[in-house]
Amino acid sequence: MKRWIPFILMISIALFTLLYMVFYGGNEPYVPKTDSPEIIYQQACAHCHGDNGEGSGLLYPAFSDDAYNLPEIKEKITQGTWLMPGFENIKGDTLNSLADFILERGYSKEKQ
Image (cartoon, rainbow, N blue to C red; front, side, top):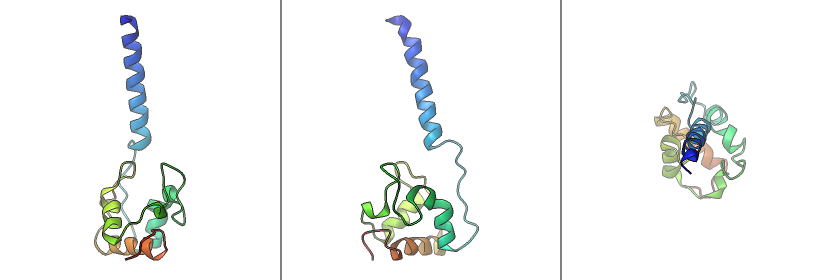
């Protein structure tokens, strides 16, 4: 049994490294270069959540899967969630307009 310990340890390290790289590695913080919520959505959100907030499966849910109000949407954008990175560089009026954009398009069940 002792001869399996190095093998199990190497597999565990490789698996952890792979998972880390898939979910966190190589991601540069997003810095918006515009105030346009449509452009910011396309650049920062659409590749996971879809062009219309429809999502793409379990890892990238549709916005309409959960009902969020405006403050909750702002919090999710800036702080992130389990798999979603936080976009701390989206602030102020830009954050407000992006959250409004998501709500106005019906990307969330609940509108405030």
